[in-house]
Image (cartoon, rainbow, N blue to C red; front, top):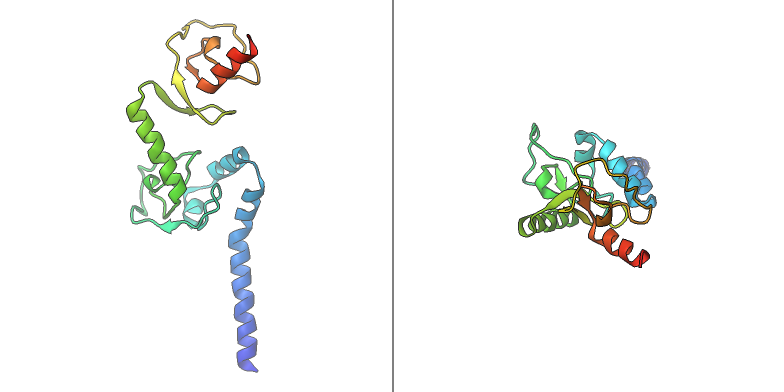
Length: 167
């Protein structure tokens, strides 16, 4: 009888611990990617170090040998919040691959910026036709970063869409 009670107690304890750990992740999984990025960005470094599943990719994160407890030189990222390079306790393999791919793009293509287009999730480029004065070109909602607006940065996809819409 005693072992039966201890088994039930252990099962109940495991359920409570698991549900409190997974509950925040389940709420992330139901949201859209932009709100998930905002929620992840609002977490402290300690809270991020306690996560065991990547909220963006829903994959188990491995323990990182790159982790330093007192790291003050860490960087943060909205697009790949748990990449190996960011020195968290655990890392997501998909976040790491995305960060490596984008770093490779910066090496190959000069003029790329670390900012992304909100609609197309593409890296923005420096606009060689940029007008340094205040321009009155108000971007359309469907193409906020088109090259035709003569802003400092542009999105190649927004530029193509803008050309197609204005034919």
